Picture 1 (cartoon, rainbow, N blue to C red):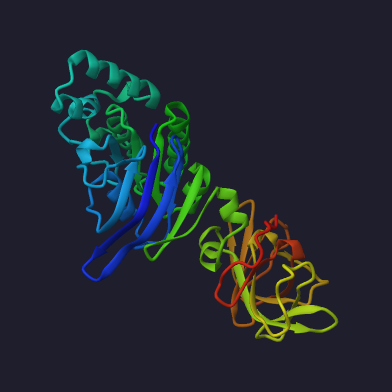
Picture 2 (picture 1 turned 90 degrees about the vertical axis):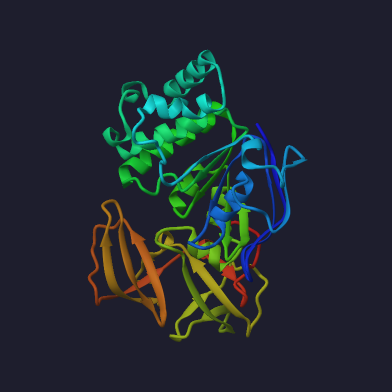
Length: 360
């Protein structure tokens, strides 16, 4: 197991900042997931850790030893890519052993390592098949096995499940999680899929425009987003954000652009009349309520089986509701929606969270 420390790490391509000054501590044996939109710098950051990308500035430390200038082959890392990159003319067994044969390991050592990988990844039935005879999930397991036999200090995954269908992604998530539990290696995993991030990570690193927005456990990220970007990025459908101005009307209310009001009773206590504030609420915490004065116009209805997602608008802002109720609303309807005050998240005019308390 290996700890990783990133100290002021930067990467520039000409005048463009791909990764801005980044500081991050990854504990030995931790499963860290980098998540963010396309172009946020997550794969570049991973490639710098691996040694495949040169560092513009800053340092990378493995177990407090500076490896910034050390080539990839000398860092003790193994990387699994989005493309399986298997040799098409070789069988699965030959693909698994190829790297070890090229580095001069003995036949006995190669057999021992390959046997262990085959057992862990349940590849026994596929060893004599070539990649064209394997499914996508089987190819990815061979690719992971090829990394596993290297016995690396650190496993690095760069969107390894992106090419798989939904069912295979689900089963491979389970296998990767089980692999981490068995090996207890340090793993760093890149994805744009928030479900992968939530289900796999010990901690999630949310990236945007080359900088870290928030680091935390999956539940911390979900329930206590540091800012509006994190709040909207993590969650599907994404969190509703309603901006307004704080007014006094027998209590504090948030006045929306539609002249509708949201009571701020039980709020963070750090807002005053005249402040511009946004409140956020997750779609699953919204319900139709005849007692509420907040009106939503339904534009689109999405059936998912257990839940029905309603997409519409409140005033000039998009709004979403996830409901398990049997009653179905139709596009064009106007419904009253409500939510408990303790489910609200509060953000200031700069989009930063107000109050550190989790509201669950």
